[in-house]
Amino acid sequence: MNDRRVVVVIEQDQEVCALLCATLGEAGFEVHCSDNGEAGLALVRAKQPDTVTLNAVLPDADGLEVARRIREFSHAYLLVVSASSDLAATVQAFDAGADDYLVTPLRPRELRVRVDGMLRRPRQLRPEHRELSETVAEAVTRCLEHNGLEVDAVARSVRLAGRTLELTKTEFDLLLIILEQGKRVVTKAELARHLQLEDLGPGRPRKVDTDRVIEVHIGNLRRKLGDDARSPKWLKTVRGLGYTLT
Image (tube, rainbow, N blue to C red; front, side, top):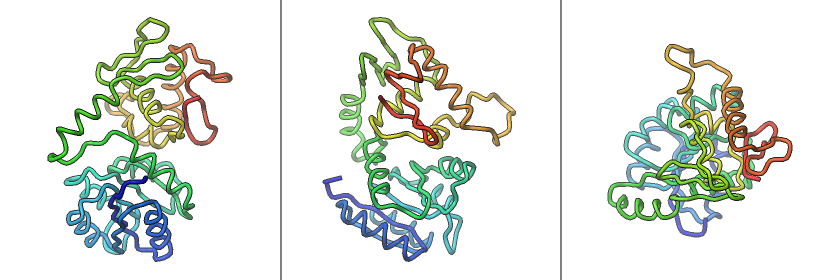
């Protein structure tokens, strides 16, 4: 995070706000702060930030509703901060448009790593930057490789040892997400957001064991790769968190 970037911090807790502002300022961000949802929305519109941090609980509004309103006009990376570590709360934040979710008390090092991870992901930019971003994104993300596994993000194809693997849409998406993040651990909550429970079929309840759904898809993906979970060549399980590259 060396280049100067803009972040809007929407946070009612003064102590948390001070930590966010100090940590992100030291990381090279131009920081703008608000302690309520309406003023925060106005700041996001005025400053057009690269990143927004948003508390799930605000004095004048539901933080997740503020997140949805931000998503109506901004493609900024959105980090939701919450006191709740409940899986349902995490999934609701991702459904509202969050790119990541952090539970208080915050740790400065983890905050920087999470924000850095968000900024490495391909992003839809504002229209005035779209032509350049599409050219760069295509060049960068067309083909990813790891230990002989080749993934073409544009053609949505996977090759291993000279043969093409037949993956489902969900399996391909999971593999691509993990590859894009490199050595960063991708949490199951993040993967749950990307899956959107779409493979559960119509009419199924939203309240499901999303961790188990992801584990099943990862298991199927490993089987097709011929990857051994006990001695993996590509996908490593980080117990209690999620997955990363070997």
